[in-house]
Length: 106
Image (tube, rainbow, N blue to C red):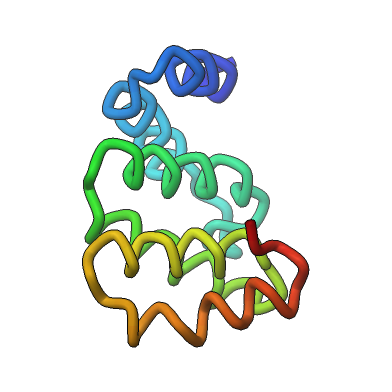
């Protein structure tokens, strides 16, 4: 239910509001496997950070997603875009290549 609310906030371009709700969802998860099962919430959280210009948080969250699943092409793309937006193109290049290789580049 809270995740749907966060999706609604995101679709209304209230990225900071969505991030707050998603932070609560992720923080309240007490799964012993860490963030397992929260990939959708964490991905939307990274996107919310990106769109609200919270680039350090977007980067950290995208890196966590990619660490958990190295085949997550969207996480690689999001990380590349975040680094590019922060004028860190050299750092972004390998992640852009990974996203391309995984078929997630846009």
